[in-house]
Image (cartoon, rainbow, N blue to C red; front, top):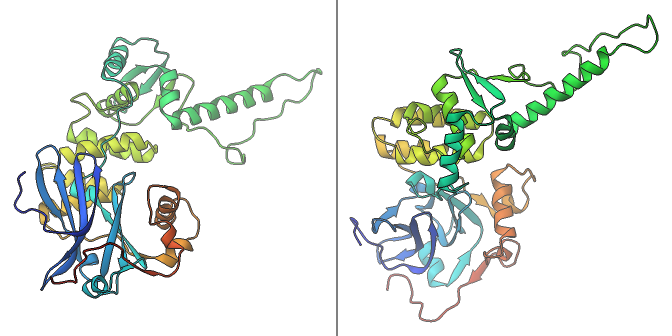
Length: 363
């Protein structure tokens, strides 16, 4: 193993594996220093590195942690107003506050899963290049067209399928309206205006055989290559400018899998030459982890943990599914692997730590 420093002797450590890193966290106590220490071991290069959570955990009493692998976060429990050394000497655990450490900001995250085997990806690229079973066109802003299979787009692009269904429904409604009446000389009603209709309308860029994507040919081709392979495997897709546009498209059309692939490629391609462009597009797409990693690697700004939630905030959240507190509460209460879930509602709020051979702080 290598590294500028190695983990010290941690009290009651917890460990977990995220991606290619082994995370270990625990209480570090000496005569003159006490903190909750977090370390990561790169399982590829076997290099240790310390994760600095910033000022959020510089004070307070923090003891237990668990990994939230779905969002690449480390959840830490404790009391933001407590004293770590005093609580350790009294063998007390506090569950009053929760701190979230975004591990992706340190380059530690779960890599995107492979959607299909490499052989199928190569077959998809070959089908796109040879124009197999193409019955639809994508029009670029320079006038060039890309022949694609409408069936593939409908199966792998939810926005396209929804707009296609709306287009067909509106077309069927217009056809039924314009059908001649049974009686001679009957009046034919005019179609309902789009501005007065309460029903959703299809995107005006979509027609029966064409979609005007309003993107350049390289960006459109890279997006179509993703739909055919569900991966980023071509040199075109890994160009920095193309990655930035793909990240914007993934945010616009709500393509979470594409966004995870682009973020993974951007993490690997983050250098001083590409950092400014990555920071700009990550700001537009609200990719906070990429922004923080850019700040820490280029202008060396200190990292700070997420907002600390109290236990009452977690149990009395407003119930919105996209709220961070609701998601964290649902994660802690639904996953049977986490033994801390019962303590969020249990009494007392401070529990005694068990185990033999626990020496007082400073020993």
